[in-house]
Length: 248
Image 1 (cartoon, helix red, strand yellow):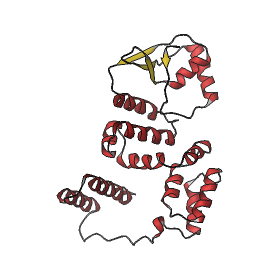
Image 2: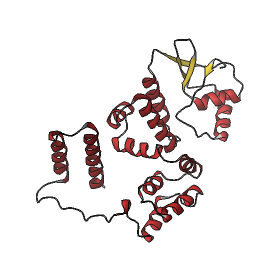
Image 3: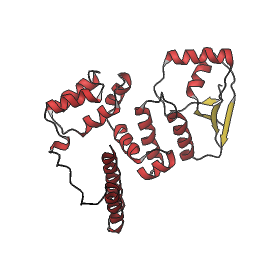
Image 4: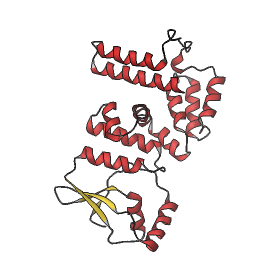
């Protein structure tokens, strides 16, 4: 156990009581699922998956543990493995997930589409997660402390800068607003519209043209335009988000 190096993991929120319960369970039944380690070129063992199990073993003052050792993996591969293992567990907070996606993007310089393919999550979820990850640290900490719904942060972030938005931020930071419905009521009462503009009425599609056919045409048309890579990426995101809105 003392030979294992524990660096910053995807998960940052741990429940001490659940760690103690897990420690008792391991003491009685043993460790059912091994720790996942990676041995580097210097022979050091780095913890990749299983920090809750590692903490529980440390609580029991264990000197050894069953381990599965990976070798010859790139940093990008290790981050993908770590993210997949942690995100498959329900208790991983969306803020930790968002930070993990941003860290992956920074380390790999991957586009949103590449992240989608590598981590196996939808492009819209990648986009929203990156927005959350780039929000102020105190907001993210409040989200974890008060179990604030992620759309509270996303919809607050989309509001135009104003004294009322600043007041809403204080309410979020103090835990007074935790639900999307609570924020929506305040925003509606204040006459807010995202980006400070009135939303245009829904545009009617040409007669006989389905929403999916229209979106396919939009996607095809963007390929024909002589646009730079970043603009093409933004257009693809817009098309996908438009489809999501039409499906709701």
